Image 1 (tube, rainbow, N blue to C red):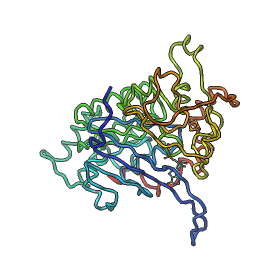
Image 2 (image 1 turned 90 degrees about the horizontal axis):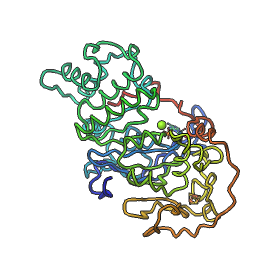
Image 3 (image 1 turned 90 degrees about the vertical axis):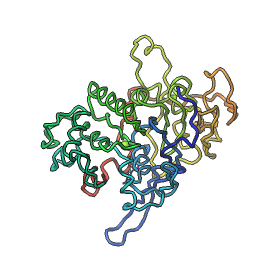
Image 4 (image 1 turned 180 degrees about the vertical axis):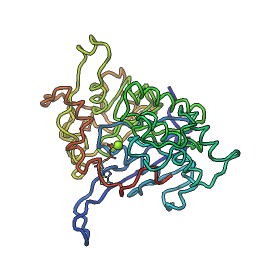
Length: 389
Ligand SMILES: Nc1ncnc2c1ncn2[C@@H]1O[C@H](COP(=O)(O)OP(=O)(O)O)[C@@H](O)[C@H]1O
Ligand code: SF4
Ligand SMILES: [Mg+2]
């Protein structure tokens, strides 16, 4: 796998990115009564032609992070750098030329496309926004892109509702890649699709990356999809990055208790291995981002939590080259060597807390119940997600 990245190599990066949503009360004189702490100071980035997987359960802030890093929503604080240029303070208007290079593929292939626009007009929108007239005209360029992503170019004048979910996602991909951007945030682009279609869409994204050198930030709640796509993986929990390293290291030697729990919730195809392997089962729901736990954000569900975890916040430290973890008591038992730096575990075995059956954990990861106090159905101004491009 890839060597640890030199920070200089990152084409797009976020440093200490924070996004909080105020909760307001009152129709006329709006009063802020609380705050949804969706993203709490994350530092991530992606290099040319690389895929950074961003994984965590539903409601942990992945979409908010993805949108903030592209400035589709204004970060509360932190800085954003694209190709060495500080873009943090750019206005929406000043961002327009950069939209050519920074694109997004949305999760829901149904709500993200305007049903009143033809496929041709949806995919050609970036040409209108950027005022680009390619040789041979926009229609020809769009039809070439349609063909490249596996759509029939003769369907140029059709409407999104005439397509299946997989084809609609190809329309979203075509729109995102038609101007050959440098970075694309893919927000759970296959989560809404059948498994057989997922593989096709993943292959398409990988081919496009090979062909155009696109850097992806690939958001998913599914560790197996992330494993297939990513060069490096960042594990997110309740608005924070808790572990980040290259893919092979993460899957071979995860250090954070949450990463272990996520991995043990993924079913193994071999029934014998599946029956015998140890499962780590998380207790309870993802806490509310309106009221974050004190100390380590994971302490309310962590099977290794000790007193220190409830009062002190563990820093995300690089504990071996290229491997960062935010935990006072990382799981080093299977490593075969000590960490070269970082927290001295000093872990004391404590009685395991009450557990849930594994099926419920998997359901938990998907849940949209108490984990999402304001839910995924927050207003999007009644508009479609393609509007910014
Ligand atoms: N526009 C918004 N207004 C208020 N809360 C929001 C908004 N967008 C997201 N949230 C909240 O922020 C948290 C993280 O949401 P999100 O980024 O969508 O998580 P994920 O993509 O990991 O499922 C959730 O609790 C969600 O309800
Ligand atoms: S710091 Fe403590 S609570 Fe947090 S993940 Fe590590 S052991 Fe668990
Ligand atoms: Mg999301």
